[in-house]
Image (cartoon, rainbow, N blue to C red; front, side, top):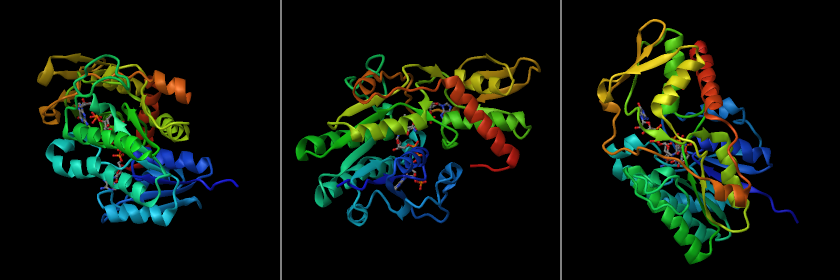
Length: 347
Ligand code: NDP
Ligand code: GDR
């Protein structure tokens, strides 16, 4: 008898939740996507993907911080796979809200692990771990073996959830995987994150709706991939023979400054940079106009300066490799933001 494939995706209103739900629906899963009760729930991402009315998609109200709700979620859905993508995921905010971040991003994962242990230890579990756990990096490039040194309350909370995932795997024989994913972006990225803030602002500047883009640390280096490919990696982890920990990354790193220049180039504007640190500005070559300015209010109390991941294990065991170049991803994001801004919609 073929077992019905039922998955829970926590955080379906987020970037990865939307792409993962789309992928699982394509694969024939029954998908239970969780969202939080708020005064105005925003489903714009699953609407953009056109899956909000899919007959196999069920939206369920759920808060990750509630153990009893976690138990009921597993009991009511009969799920055999859980992808825990819900989190307070913004690093900057975690410095202002360290306790909320710990409760959601750290302990939240344990609520689900406990629920699995209580309801059905055969359920497979994916934990959304992060390259932020490497923080002040101890070696280059980072792999599954690189020691951790988180630099934010978010990174610390994720590291706790990561080790608890491994602990439940080893203690209770639960098929619990941890994906250490490096930054992944898309047109569905939230505007609080730097790539989308940049592409949305570049679109607005191009259309005459904004004068200057203000940013924090332009020297930070990130390994940026395409989110749609990364959710495929999550799925592959739960289909593997053994539960394990995997890095997903592109093995290329660029500065925030590089991404700014790339985004302006995508709308035909060449920029050059002048000055240092807080005084640095980005100037349009043809007009001499200042289009980018550093504002220290976007600096973080502690910064992750350089991330670059090696996904060789994921390639070897899961057959996963990234395919989209950063330049293509950047153009895809800028074009989506140009379209949205022309229509006057703003997500
Ligand atoms: P988003 O911030 O876009 O989405 C986070 C989701 O979590 C949202 O749906 C949010 O709901 C939900 N959420 C927040 N708090 C709770 C709560 N208390 N109970 C239930 N749901 C909650 O993140 P991404 O899609 O970018 O990332 C997905 C996961 O992967 C996150 O855990 C993130 O930390 C991790 N990650 C992301 C990387 C990236 O580059 N994108 C890299 C590595 C890890 P709401 O809409 O109500 O806020
Ligand atoms: P990050 O992503 O912290 O890596 O976490 P973010 O895009 O927020 O920052 C990347 C780098 O850009 C610098 N930066 C700015 N960042 C923001 N948001 N806004 C700015 O104006 C700005 N100026 C410069 C930051 O200082 C940083 O160095 C993301 C999240 O998705 C996490 O949930 C995930 O775990 C990691 O990626 C991997």
